[in-house]
Length: 210
Image 1 (cartoon, one colour):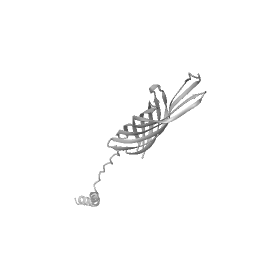
Image 2 (spheres, helix red, strand yellow):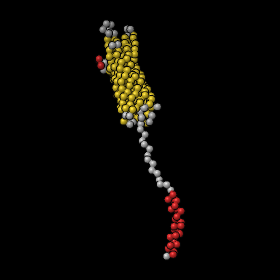
Image 3 (tube, helix red, strand yellow):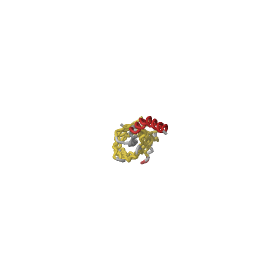
Image 4 (cartoon, rainbow, N blue to C red):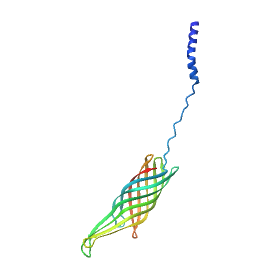
């Protein structure tokens, strides 16, 4: 019995400091994971785009490509995004026709083209995290060029900036915190010498957000 009690005492003697050390340690503190980062569309951006345009009203059959850049600013309130955007593009949306001059019998060819497109628009959208669906509208402008050629009098041409309106819709998606891609449809209503020409465009673009 004495040996057993001695063995227990010796065990307690050696275990005592370890038990005291364990009792003196603070309980581990649970740390909640950080809240997820909420994406915000607020800020300035600049980007580039390219697309295709066509006009088929009033007997026209104009079509062609364009490319350019855009700059803008967004401000997000809850899920709503308000913005302003301006863009400019060089274009070759054109139509060529040829025939015979009934007066002289000489061959004649004519071409009308939209060499540039520009717009200044407001944007109103709804954000779903990294995705933004929006409508847009404002002023539109186009550089319109017309030319006519004949072996009798050569080539006559002239160009002029014409104004009108533009409206459409699009979807934009942020692929990284500073980069987003978009797909956008716009219709331009341009008054060309008192004749209204509607130009439909579809374009893809990329933006860098500051």
